Amino acid sequence: MRPLQAILTDAKSIAAQYEDVTGRPLGLTDEIGECEAAARLGLSLAPAHEPYCDALDLHSSRLLIRSRRVTPERRERNQRVPAVRRRIGWDAVLLVLLDERYDAIEIWRAERLAVLDALDPAASRRPRRALNVSQFKSIGRLVWSDAGRWTHPPPLRDYRFGERRRT
Image (cartoon, rainbow, N blue to C red; front, side, top):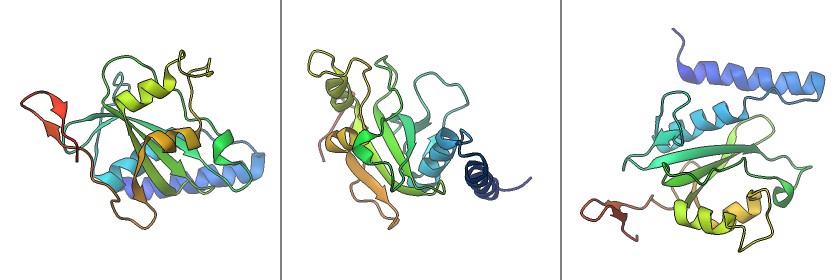
């Protein structure tokens, strides 16, 4: 069996070639983003179709992973973050930004309360309950960049009270 990284490299190449030929994306952005986040941040991916959880981090935080390709011709503020449902079951959202060749360039993390506050329809004029990339960045923090280093460690869970400690 081939290693996952080799398969992922082939998938990226095929997706980029497909878009070059057809002008349409192949639709692998989410899967590639999940694999990139897992590899870069040491996450454990959840089984396929696990409701409200795509991965677990080292502190057992349940993460939703959303991916978006950003290209020079499309500005970040006009690109929407894929939908985030308000249902219980996740602790934070990771936004994986991919370049035009599907390579990860940044990973941002926003905690549950910040995302829910930003999606609150009473506090905003977003009827679709969606954020764009620049709004997500304003409520989150950069946890990985193509420089390959952590910029901020994830918050630690205080198991005595079931809440997060501030770091």
